Image (cartoon, helix red, strand yellow):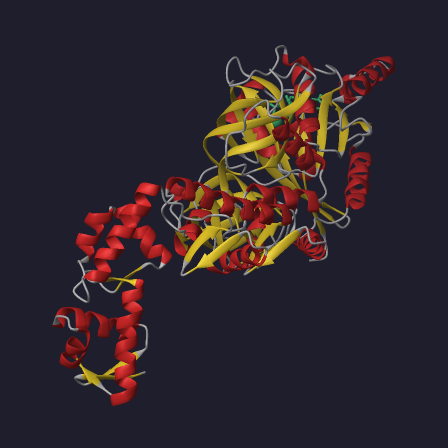
Length: 624
Ligand SMILES: Nc1nc2c(ncn2[C@@H]2O[C@H](COP(=O)(O)OP(=O)(O)OP(=O)(O)O)[C@@H](O)[C@H]2O)c(=O)[nH]1
Ligand SMILES: [Mg+2]
């Protein structure tokens, strides 16, 4: 690929000569529909191309009629430069102004203003007057520095100068960056017999090659690139900055439509809630209200949405603000994408802006200061500020996920993240990232959960380890690291698989103490034939029973048999002494030794097997 690739677009009032100019420049009539030819009016987007010097230029020709402005919006989303066409005999007209406002909101900063149909003007003073008028109209917009060139598409006057200016501007712009993330906003879908489904659009961000797998968003269908064309030329690889037709296989025609995005699988996701920075046009008439229904134009997509005005009651004409937009259906969106809002009825362009967060995840409280603060950082923040903020809102999170939701390009995000880890602002534990303050919050949260648990269960010594881990929603590795830190600092104590705060102890009332003493006494007196687990629970109540278990005052051997701890030690001691003296013991010997029934003897032997004091060999036990 030697030539630099660019896509430019026309703009301007109906009938001012956009399509005629495109034809004069390229030899291609962009009005392809029969209805367009019949009405001599552009209705939908038209496409043409030309090469000037090293610059290969695709042109998107838009309709000027106000009824078709929404088609125009599907085309101008991804252009590098605008040709704002103004008929010299009419001068600035309503859609001249509206298209100009749209270009300004979309930050299409490069442009050439073409004063066309000059063959109709005999009076040089008139031309001068119109030129002044145009300068006035563009002042304060993105096109304020754009040259104003007089042209006649009929006589060809000024066309050479226009081409020279175009070449110069595009040369200055340089080549499109290739960051390995191809993305194409679909503006046309059609089927060719014997060929299949074709989508067209402007390719941005990266290249696409034959055989590549792609994802279609929203809808998240996968497809494969079977054919590629730019400007009717077959290609093996299409590069960013060009108009591309993709022949797709593996997807139904019905699953494709204007507004979708074609990208590498997993590189961009759809959303129904976005945070944006918004500017309300000065001539919008009324303020933009909270909870207003609007049409969102994003890339080539058009979606109904509702506004949430953040931090103020509404946004007055000519003012800026933060919005959260709730979309009526999913759309593909990435941080930094520009958009336009229109009022559905009566139709009018309201304003537009930039996406700050394509996945805010939740509805914001409108007047909380931290919400506006966060949007402020997103609008002007450095990569590390944005990463920290994204992480703070949903942590812990793996690095790859953080980078992808931050919307920052891979390289800058990776570098910023490495700095944050080195500075100690972010920790990486078992592949998960967490901010330093998030880490401290976790410790506090663990402590709080235990405290609440102790309050609710005053007679439990602590919470089972696994329960705390799942309540905190942590991976085992992160949880273990957290617990190691908490026990190290003596904030949490681990005892027998139970976790408790360092200051928690079991306090029994005098009544309970009496009840316990009575019960344990009874246990001791009952020798080896102790009350069953059921009987013990009944006598003490569940709460006291488990408290004694937690405290180690009772030892439950199986579902049925429980001993007082002193008793347990005594019986276990008898068995081990017997084994030391005799080498082995069978169930009958154990029964006689403990003067109990076979059931109790076996329960104890099996328990000793379990805790690896003894080992079973055939019918006897030996020391393990
Ligand atoms: N005399 C003269 N007429 C022109 C010139 N360029 C265009 N026209 C005429 O102006 C009319 C409108 O031209 P189009 O090119 O269709 O205008 P457009 O801006 O594409 O219109 P829409 O796409 O509907 O917005 C046609 O009748 C053209 O023949 C020009 O340079 N000189
Ligand atoms: Mg036209």
